[in-house]
Length: 320
Image (tube, rainbow, N blue to C red):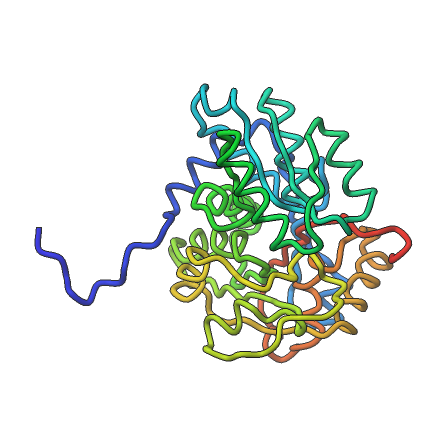
């Protein structure tokens, strides 16, 4: 068949991949609610719906992609086990579902990882290896162990199975609130927004997808806009403090995401605080980035029916 020379390149995932993921993981994750916030709507001038992914068992959406990936491994691969590099929600999601399915899980974390995160991951039955001072060093060590021990590496975002699992968030949101006309999604490596944008752009009407990054870590913003802003500093949104976004996710973001906005530390702090005060819900800095965008870029969202993903609730209690 002749191919159209100017047809866009095929993207790494389709809405059918996301629908298949939803069928696969359905019985084993929490179908979290999408609820209107009247107070935040009044405050921002948008009609604001919140997707409470902080109510997953490990308090973050990352379980979806991890489980979707584990369920697609063959028996021999499962028996050998999987490995990942993560100090955060991916580690816990993979460890929890690996334990449930009888798949041995090894997680490599940087040495400075807070003890509470190490202990939480171990409590789900994972073997934790502390290596290196940075995530990059932990990642390199995980790839080394993968080769030495014949394990399967499960990337936190740059994998179509992960992206498809995360996209199930959007399927649920649009099922619960069919008239959403905008989805506002935090971006770290880009797995969540890739899945969500794939679903949104397959809808039978226009739905805008806006990504949010912390000003201190504008890595996907740089990749898409060709800018070279620094990615460094101590951010409240450590869950999206990614220096290098995924290659596959960047393709999807460039093709399907309408806009990326940046938020300040002050806006992130205000968003975390408002969610506790108004919604009585605990959200980590990365999880509050969507609301931070509405607070910081009000006119961009005014009058829209906006769905915000509260993607995680794992915030250090002393920090809170």
